[in-house]
Image 1 (cartoon, rainbow, N blue to C red):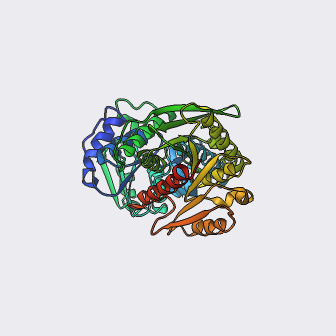
Image 2 (tube, helix red, strand yellow):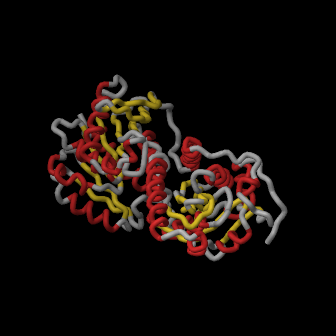
Image 3 (spheres, helix red, strand yellow):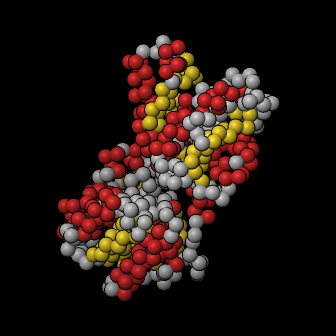
Length: 445
């Protein structure tokens, strides 16, 4: 199918036009997946037009060494690899050279993925429609890998959407995606940039800014508790722990008697929409909250630090001491809410001699990682696990047997690890609120 030449002002303009073409998806359970970096500005407008969450799908083209713009395949998150044997053979690329290019691009996938996941926790795709968006299709190898990756992550349906594409590439991908939406398939296609007036390079900073803006919009759409009196404290803070500056947000309602410190899991941050939702429920119940990053952005790229629960526990302890030194928070009973590896960090911090924590709630936590410290925890601990999260449920049952403090295990029926099923996160918030009210307000000195 050949269409008239369409020239877009820039990627944002292309995204708005593409969103209009995809309007029929509005109201469905859709996740928009932009391909960094150039695909993110396009995907941002598509996500905004569909009122859907935006995520990044990190995929890297395998360029022919002497002609990098010519793609001979692609690699992506999760170990996905797509190789175009026709291009490889036609270009005379040896197996050894192909392996070298693949190794180099895999390193870049890992770097970008770690940086982006510190800002935008991965959006679950299981059972949902994944709309894969890029700024255009040349050979189509990157888009093919992206569609394969989206399906491997459990997407029920995969829609590939681009503003412009080479006709042959679009045709070849109609067997890979359930639907391919292209605004223009011009007869004379040399490069994607020829169809944009402004095709300047998209920076990592722009990608991160767009993901954060989309995440903020997603938070605004999420169910939220009714608003009460304005909080006494609501500010961005910076905590210095062992010489490292950690960013956070502190909210203390007027007359709050307790304060809950959130410790997020690996691949997440203080921007986690799930933890922010739970924090909002706790605030409406009269509890203060502190959401903060356990690691700096550069440290979050180091997987050894991400899973170093002893380090994370020490950080959490130092942040607690910082709260006890502030006038607005020094008299509040303190609780910890930990998710995934953050739950292990909470247990490690609570096991320290003289730890002032009065209650702990773990959501989909990994208490097994705090194994050597479990017997030292004295604070009442609630373990919340999804009923469909089989492995983590088993680990929590084993950990509950090793805790000597008062503890309970609450299983949320039908919930998976991230509690993305309708109503399940509300159950988590309700359970956590009851636990903290009992132990921070009614029991704590």
